[in-house]
Image 1 (tube, rainbow, N blue to C red):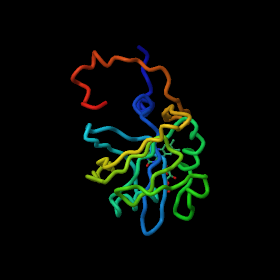
Image 2: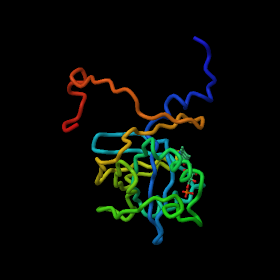
Image 3: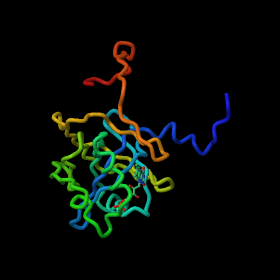
Length: 180
Ligand SMILES: Cc1cc2nc3c(=O)[nH]c(=O)nc-3n(C[C@H](O)[C@H](O)[C@H](O)COP(=O)(O)O)c2cc1C
């Protein structure tokens, strides 16, 4: 084996789904792009990593709520727009042609253009690393969404969309939770 530059190691772990995270704070909706996410339990419990330089951070801390919108390949340029602009003075929904829809359990909005939206409440904030632990409380899927390929960031400004599916359901056996 050849040595891999250590600073590139994160690129092999990064490609979870690219998400658009909505928040609502002081009467204002906002969205940011996050690719540093992780599943923590089937319940469902998730984690995401962000920091105080983002305008969404304060909203997340103060409101204790957010929506995880799952981005698909058709949204590649939108996730870049949303993730390279701050919502401090801009309404990113209006500017980037996204439609906020009311969620059922929380005040942060769903994104109509997303294939899946998961309403979440913050269960914990691990301040040392700015990890937010989220409990999913309601989830929505748009089955008529044309492009269902989930988008993955590779960490170097390139992206991949879902490709080949390997079906191994039998071999996974009781490692699969009920209902999936
Ligand atoms: C592809 C992509 C992935 C990103 N992933 C993260 C991330 O995991 N965590 C984070 O804090 N910021 C991430 N960002 C940057 C934020 O989305 C960006 O700072 C955004 O402008 C914050 O918006 P806000 O100031 O309105 O909250 C990402 C941006 C892009 C384009």
